[in-house]
Length: 338
Image (cartoon, rainbow, N blue to C red; front, side, top):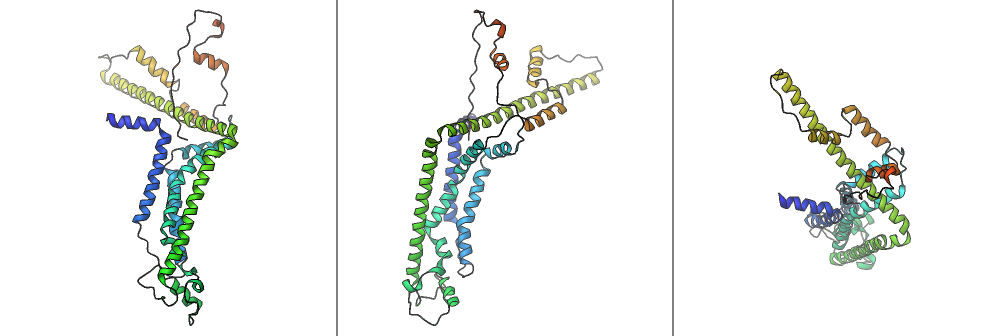
């Protein structure tokens, strides 16, 4: 259990590296899925293009959506986008930064699938087998075939067992031609995605540094604020449940004992600690109103001076005293995974 706890703490403290690792695993999984996929071209003129394009683009779309599903920040982005404005304005630049950060990771696995598919060439060969230039690669003087019959023969190029058009165009020549084009597109796609990633990751902050830092800061703030709110709600729920259960057992004990026995009293320190954790919220209706108010009208991003003084333990009327010891500070680190 200690090893699992250490691994969990490591993942919590390195969530960005963890998400990058998940994206890498999905990329490797996409390549493995393609190698294990049983590719069967229908070898029919009216179905080859649809089947080939479907294999090329449908799995990347599924992998792209899975990349968003496995990212916990999707719910946070949707909540921030749809929440009422209230006392806190919504910044579209922050929402764009959060979406772009998630989209960059989600696009890794689809890009790997498209690259592997194009470099392999089977999908492209199935989709565009009817577009082979017979006048350049085959027997241009071969006559006696209508256009429909010629497309029916060319559609069978991916199927070696049933191809019967050697007199029209040699299958090896057509396969080499189509795979050459497919691999050229594959390497061009890899180069394009590499250049795009370089521009996004390296050059974008250089031109919009101030806006980039602002968007990055407030996206981290939204993430950390949500974590702190969840932790506060969890602590309050634990204290609320504990006090509720204790009251239930004390009431049942009094009803059953009828005053003949004395139940052990809780220590004053324990009672004070539980009341402090409840923060004055002691019924379901009040808690529901607070949660509804948090959703509809989050507090403004402005810290009052009185709150800062109370939070640090300073009293305004005692600032001139020299015997006041410096306030104790507790350092807590939260890691954002945006």
